[in-house]
Each structure stands twice: as structure tokens, then as C-alpha cells.
Length: 115
Image (cartoon, rainbow, N blue to C red):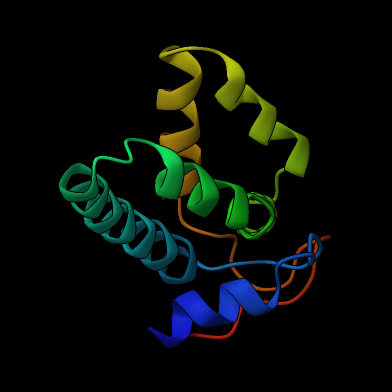
């Protein structure tokens, strides 16, 4: 839970690096929260309202951690735009996010702290 909150606290930090665990734990928490919100919306009959508000709230933190994750693999944050390409872009982003980070310091900063 602390990993998720740490990412939310750094919602406008687009420089530096984010490790594998930081990124994927954030993704996992977002999936779990989205499922819970979907069930609640289904029970209340407000299809989409809560999910939309949640997506809007985590847009900047998600973008920030994605860019920092790409920095950890020694790539520019602009690579995140590959995700705009349907299907193939999504697959490419998943692969890029799953790659291990560079050993030692790189041009984007020092090795991310283990979470």
C-alpha cells in the first residue's frame, strides 16, 4: 500500500527513475481498485461515473510513474506515446515496462531505491 501512496505523492515528478516493483505494484493496485469500483457501480447503477473520476484522478500519477519507469530502462519518457497505437503499441509498452532497469546510474539519475 505504501508503494501506491508514494507514487501518488510524486504525482507531478517526471524526472528520475522508478523500479519494476514500484511501477507494477501501482498497476496492480489500480486494477484492484478499478474492479472494486466497477462492482460498486454495477450495484448502484451508476455505470462509469466512479471509474471515470478515478481514472481522471490517477492520470498524472500514472503518467509520472510510467515516464520514470522508462527512464529506468534508459529510454526517453516520450516512448510512453507508443501506447497510443492500438494493440501493437500496448504490447510494446508492456514489454518496455517489463524490461529490467539499467545497472548503476544512467543519464536520468541514480538507481531507484528498493521499495
